[in-house]
Length: 561
Image (cartoon, rainbow, N blue to C red; front, top):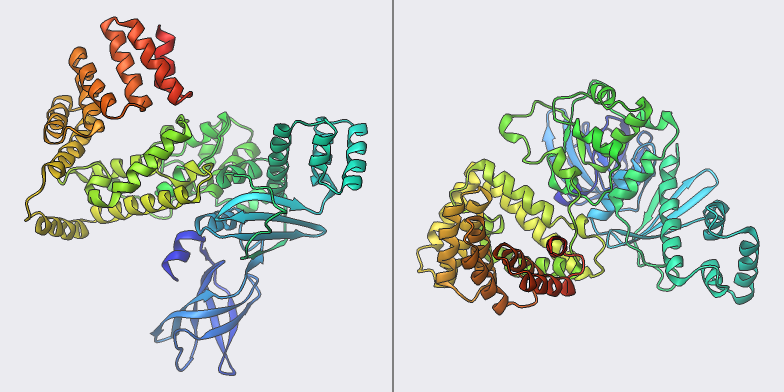
């Protein structure tokens, strides 16, 4: 299978016999695994199978009918093992392809088009742009905006009736009619439409059977309201609202299966809002406890617990342990870190963080991108990777409107993942170090030396080696005094050592270089508080909050005055 397919769409292990027609002759074949975009199979007694030829594929179970190109083939004594990539439409049966896997795959492959799901008389469509779910539609009356508002008592029967009349008279959508009649404010309409779209998508998870097809095509320009919905959060909410036990039980692994947190940061750090029951379940997942024990220890109703576990498995946050986990392969992340709801800063702060990292991530090299020095231990590399993955996970910032920023996040995430893949592999790391040594034969500039000292300082600071960090940050400032970030970290480290006067001077130098920075202003404010200068502290906090109204450190400072 190709690398992109492995990365984006789940592969299902299933053996199934089918006939393969090659040059007018039928050959017996057997699936080894399959996904929405490809199949791996064994073919008996075929004389030769050239890469690149396109074959018609018809399999009864799983139900797959498509055309596929031979991507690769390998001869064995029993026949050819082949990898087929789908050249037709992405379609299938909901019993063969989990809806959650399909939505995640479409998101991570940045697809644009319409996913149509059919079950009996139900026809529902999900509009997807660059992987993001932005709208949904349904042929069911109960999914209409007015019906949802009426059911939830946001409007009454008379208002519903009059809005239908206005909709027909003016040839407008019902939402527009409700705003025109004064029954909804414009901002209430936006929230109502988002709620309607979410409800339509969530309702798909209750389908016991059905088919789907994804049309990879541009979206209609005028018909779709563009929203931003978190795929992981919709999956979680959809599954935890399923009230049919059979759907849950059929899709769960055996009750003695051991569960662990996903080993892939792309799965762990998604944008998802967990309730208290889910946090309890997640806290019990440690790579040693079985599904049945977790269900019992949660003290929840059994069906409620199983439903949550299925939802967490479907989002990919947790996974089944398929083989014994080596001690040094345990991920550097805990359930508490996932449960902890990190405060998202203002868009301006997030944009600055992304732009700053994007501008330099490749010049930093693998060690620099992870904030490490060249002598970092394997455990330090893991910790650094998970920290950076959490910060720059594309799903964490799905709400940003800019597609350019989304692409930059994907590039950053891909680079730090590449860095981890190389540095966590002893042989690849030795080769990379040799390359660095060859490059290092040229004389480094003061600025390059300063960047190295700064990165080493961050590593020591993270380890709580404050004196070592202070020396390294001081060297960075000495070698390149033009970088505000160097002065800021030097000041923060001085503050840790209770050298408050020196600390505030260092951070003021950072503010002089880069004035409109809420982080610098807030930290200087806290230092002024420690020195007893309340008015100066208040002024700093107020300026920080003007730049970033939701800045947590500035708000904390104001509460202390």
